[in-house]
Length: 437
Image (cartoon, rainbow, N blue to C red; front, side, top):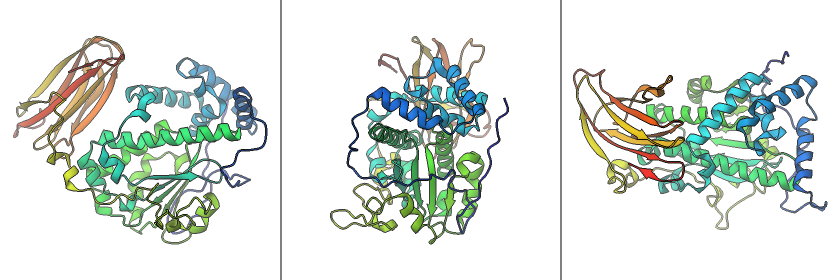
């Protein structure tokens, strides 16, 4: 079966190179909070209506691809995940290549299990992320999707990464994406049609190229993009990057290779003009804060609507982890890894699907890190890599699919001049919730 290739569409954006808005939605509907007058549909009727709408524009080849994809992933997907509109997101992201869509889907399911995504909405984020992460969901766009404003230029990525682990920063971003999906699922039920895409506005007012290219910050941005690309296909309807300074062309060139072509085609980049009317076409003036061209203000007259949009700001150093004592509930150990040597901690895992978690930092200089399962045909769970744990404490986890002895290795074999003082905490969480240290 021969599938058509993905094609770029022309962009109407000015000032900077960017993508187009993607498929044009013929009808823009203004959202009001009122319920429709039509009789309440049953869950099955709503699902059938959504399925009909999702497949009505597909040709025979794409319908065949959809059916093949459903059969292939039926053993590892929930009933909700097998709905047409959800499966089409994965197929669209891989240009209806069933093999690539299946590989992407299965890898994402593994990622969701490792991060315990079924309970991500219950996770309590560190206070510093809630107070200073530049992000806000302002309501619904003209299509019923969630509307998001990210005042990235006003954020303090260095401060956030110094105050919370990179994993927690990523987890907080992912939690917001999952909340967005819940909101759109509720709106889908209300309207009786599938709604699964959001409008994002990235405001770069105050953007600092120096801060952007700080290595931990750049790595964090790239990691977030890779998580988004790999696990939230077609969630993005359009991204408006506004108030972009000229130097942002260099920053965009650094991250563009990590974006899929389908995503690039949805990005529109503007300087200080050309975007105002476009935002109002996609987001009603009553929903869009006045600072970005709408009519909405907070009760106190705040034009940023900071009641729903966190504007970021400089993170006080009192939040920095280096200025805080370690969690007394975690059993941290300290060792010195000699020059040219390594330290391996053997962890016994009894229950399959247990989660192995780690936190570590070094006083000075980087260190290598890896996780392997002894006696396995494919022993490497996490390949050896050098970690700048002296700059940013490292935190992560993997799912242990099989019982056995897991080797957690801190490697300093590449350094013949310096020993490394290491502080670490390793925990195993069994599927039923018991925690071992």
